[in-house]
Picture 1 (tube, rainbow, N blue to C red):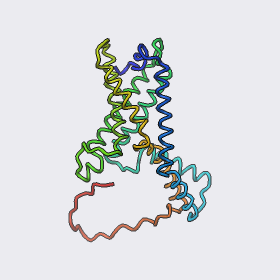
Picture 2: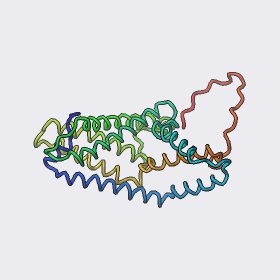
Picture 3: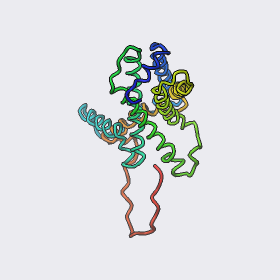
Length: 266
């Protein structure tokens, strides 16, 4: 299973051009959904207006080398390793899901566009990357969904309570899970049995929900968050602090006091 390109096997019944067209359509849906999200929520407009206001209160002008240094550190720390989440379970789950999704998507694109013909030979690395990415996404997304969501962890809401904001993570986990099951069943060479076809349909539908639901889900946050992190660190470096007051001194400690339970919030 882990060494087989499922899209190459699918090409025996579905033309490669159809699979490639599906990927292109999904990419277009992401672009359209993100643009609609920008127009409706005005996130980007607020971002640039806030950056312009903060620039007026900057205490120093950053040189090009200083800006590049801040941006590089932000990419390495805040974006690539999500350091803002601390060193706890939430960060581990996020990293599993994030890098799993990246591997899963890259593997899908490479195998569909380069090795989806029946006579093509797929390098072993790509199916391994695709399956490993799917497993990481399922583990990270499920860990977050069942145990780490704020409304479940801190507000005692039941894990099965679903709101519109949950569409992204649920669709992401469903896509990876259905893809894994479909790949496994397909590797068994079931011929005319219905099992693999059912999960192929579920895999397709979950992809449509994931990429077609950008406007209603938190999908676009993967574009906003890096920009916001960079702007925040640039504002820290030039002293404007996004027009926020400097952090207060830590409160004075007066003995042990009351032994309190560790807070469970952001």
